[in-house]
Length: 131
Image 1 (cartoon, rainbow, N blue to C red):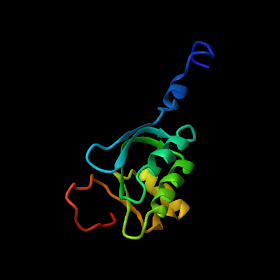
Image 2 (image 1 turned 90 degrees about the vertical axis):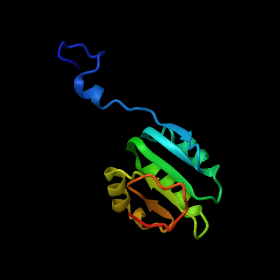
Image 3 (image 1 turned 180 degrees about the vertical axis):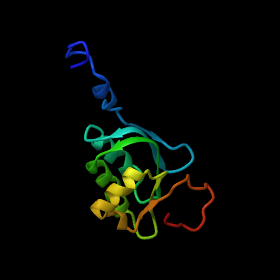
Image 4 (image 1 turned 30 degrees about the horizontal axis):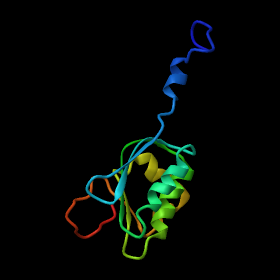
């Protein structure tokens, strides 16, 4: 209910909690996705299909527009990394603090094929480093 007693109009708090549906787009110059908005159960099937399209290739996921991620969608990202052959990685960049914390709480941060970066990877291949 808002200040005027109208239950149909969103209050300041309710408006602040409004979800922004996720938008998944392909990265133009590399195998990967750009994710903007909230990753939640509503987008989970689309996220899984999008990740499956890359097969055994390295995958890069641009999270610069990510506002929320639920544990199910985070698990889908980790599962996609887990399916990659040895030597390939799924890179999350920039990996926001809330995502890093959730990975640590679940223990998924130890997945060897999951790479967290603070910045966009270079288009020029080079050594891979965990950051």
